Image 1 (spheres, rainbow, N blue to C red):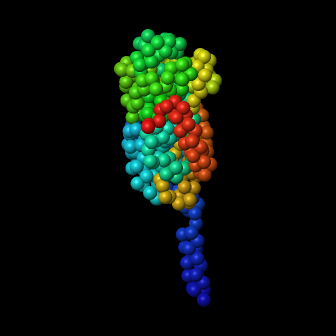
Image 2 (image 1 turned 90 degrees about the horizontal axis):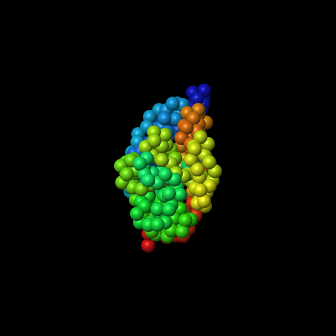
Image 3 (image 1 turned 60 degrees about the vertical axis):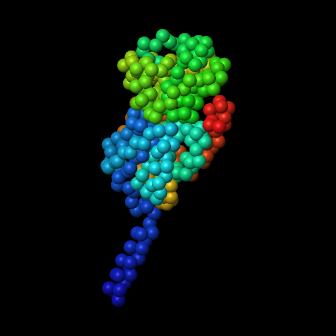
Amino acid sequence: MTTRRAVCISILAACLAAAAPLSAQQAPAALNLFIPAAPGGGWDGTGRTIEMAMRTDGVVKEFKFENVGGAGGAVGLPRFLSRKGQGDTVMVAGMVRVGALIAANSPLKMTDTTPLARLTDEYEVIVVPAGSPHKTMADLIAAFKADPGKISWAGGSAGGTDHILAGMIGKAVGVDPKKVTYVAYAGGGPALAALLGSQVTAGISGYSEFSEQIKAGKLRALAVSAPARMPGIDTPTLKEQGIDVVLGNWRGVFGAPGISADQQKALIGLIEKMLAGPTWKAEVEKKGWTQSYLAGPEFGKFIADETTRISAILGELDLKKK
């Protein structure tokens, strides 16, 4: 009788363990970070920061990176969507991806993924090469208004945050957004190279992507798209220079399609451990990011709302593909 009871108890324990939520039972010991952009850009930088913070604070020790750049993430998205049900794979993306998919009239949507968490917001900076004749934003705008076609704006993919900001600036100063000469690059690295080589007039990106070159005197920051001056950054806003434009860029992480609710919870649990650790907090402050955590279903609703909002902006600026 005792033996039979012991066997029954063992079977019951095994069944309960098998039925336990993955978030409580186990989280992935290793993560595959999928970056739908070339190395050197904002998504890549966010992914590398996630890796450093999780490794340093002992959340996850093993990582594998995959960068697939092109068209604001539209090239990489089909590959990520093929990872259906893989609970150890996470994609880094953000507002740029939403806009790029809409601008290209893509049949793929961000809602095809599993929402994990919005992590940060970052305001944009407008820069010119150090040797540029445009010493101020007023200089750049004067030249832009005189001959819009001669002023080239470098940034990320078409329809993304950088492109939207260029269009909004044009509209605010009386230049038809359709006349903006926007040069789209697959990642922050190629855009930076074009700027440093003076192949373009101006560049637009998140402040952290250009911060080292600004500090080194290789790029001149003319304005930021924040509503007020950013702490520790001595660059005037567009608004205080008479250009009524404010725009922020959010970034987040997404799970593969078809993962279970328990797998989603387990991944969100890892993210929350990272956010609570000292390394992530220090990096957010160092890079000038604003933490804007939003997880799970709430993040999913935010994505749906953003798709509607950005679609309206792109339509207003006539930046959508016909």
